[in-house]
Length: 472
Image (cartoon, rainbow, N blue to C red; front, side, top):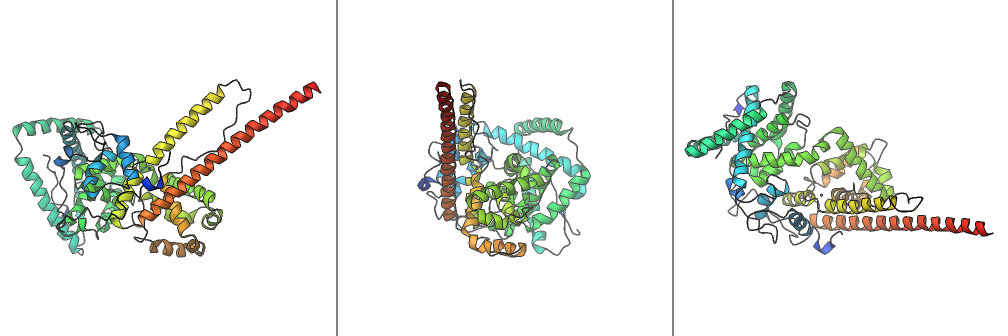
């Protein structure tokens, strides 16, 4: 429907807790998959610009999608968590709703029009930075990476296919798309770029993209061209989100979306929606906040290990930020890492925590407006900032506490954490993390209720003391 406007891209020089039995270790226990290779073992080709089939594909999860194609978001997120993710065949379509590319309220009839609009807007956005920085359209190479030179060939072939699709569109389709393009151009006309900052972002992207997941089947053979698709997506995002721009690690996250969705436009919008929530984690204050929360949780769970790892500036917990930032992408086998990413992203436990927090807020309002002269002071209960991913991180730390306690310096810590890559058992870690979070919530809730009882008992004793003095 929409063809890419690019030409060659290279120059020669150039997150009531569920029962543990129904938790994220559910029916896909032991599931291994690779979305990059079909049943015949043949690697995929370069991702198309759009994936029209996604507009009418159904989600077969029980009770999740109605007859008109609307998705029950609560049931979808609950299913993902309680069943330990979704099957590989469902993942691409599920992610389009999980990460808000398609509104859950949209119908199968509405989605083709939504996709057209998103595709046109993306193309206009990409064309804008390409016209302003024509020298950045092509990835500059020194000619020593033969695989990247091959990637260009496959990418150019993909570009030719997309142009052919555009040429055979009906007059009605072309007229509709022309109108959408005009709308998009008006929408983005006033957008200005800081060209110096954008060029710096492109420079870093060009260093990161060539080494992104190249050991995966998705980026092998003809799939090498997907590296250039990934590059276009990241540059377009950086250009139109200057407050975030680009930071190292975004390539790994975006690559995950591209592999699962296998579409340039779908990947851009899904990744953008994800970054609306998590872009702060790529800034210095977000990095510190993550480590601060993990340190606070570890202090409650294991004071000794906390004392050993947390220095004055928490430098020793920096590796935890990488785990959290990338959703433990390196620590689990690849297909398990994809499954964990959707489990963490379903926000199932976090949504429950928000409901609990709302109830607590209503209770505080009731106490405030009660006839008591001295309202009961708030007590510390469950810290709703302790999200499930933090318990996942704490679980890994606690399971390896002896090895961590033996690390005397940062070098030994780095060596130890590197030794974990690809070796952790997801199902076992999920089960322990869920148990850890449940036990923490039970303990915190019990401490909260006990403290509330003691405060009320103390107030009653104070009342009877004054009563006795009055009649004495």
